[in-house]
Length: 341
Ligand SMILES: [Zn+2]
Image (tube, rainbow, N blue to C red):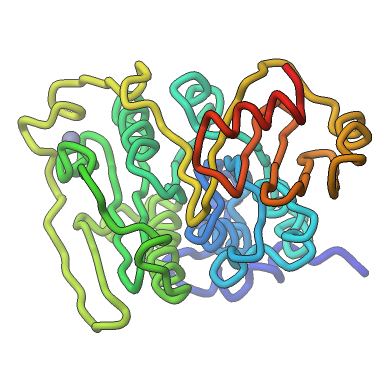
């Protein structure tokens, strides 16, 4: 196969006047970070990789499961049966359709401790997460460093997105001064339509392209939400920072200091995560050790172990997720038994 000419690959996009040859060059020279590679993250990564964004860093610590395939468009059944980390599976899938761009997968959660490293040199951050703690962490970092970011969320048939251009528009904290309290709907309680996800991601990916090519006059300055089932749409003005905003007004960044530390949301699982031992685990060795006790399978990234009624997913850094219990004490004793200390 002869290599595709870059001109040929992006010819339909450069014909579009908003992008053009110059815009395409800017996309090629761009570097972005996508935080979370579930449903919205998959769609964002797919669209922006196909559009030719030159370097895309993908941060996600989760692994592919069968229940993801209904909406997480970068993954397939083989990824789920191998329990591949989403960041790795996404990088492989993208390389198959665009080998000319650079994908940097990071199997990690975004935390106050690694945010500087993971956002290093990024020109734009895209939100593919499923929790407000991480979004406030992104918002704090982005405002502090004058870095644009795009908030995107979807649940049920509902989608919402906001462009944050620090100093120019409202930030996330201008609009939601505190994370939503109490119970709010998540994809495990309300379910989720893949079409709502893809619409939210399509809008956010388009805004990303506008930001990256410098089409500032077209960048939307509202919080946009819609319901694809009820055919409802709403916009809330977000064109000015809120004068009393603690984040962009007062420059207080508690989330960067580790307050309200992001927790791991395990969407739709009867499960508990523990991290008892802080040294690496040799998954091949552990696999041999567990074989007499149940069914075990591993690759370079993850080990899966089934021992009725429990299922353990073990990562090389010693973190484990237990299914079949939500009791941390039970999980801890299982960990001690299976993995040791
Ligand atoms: Zn603000």
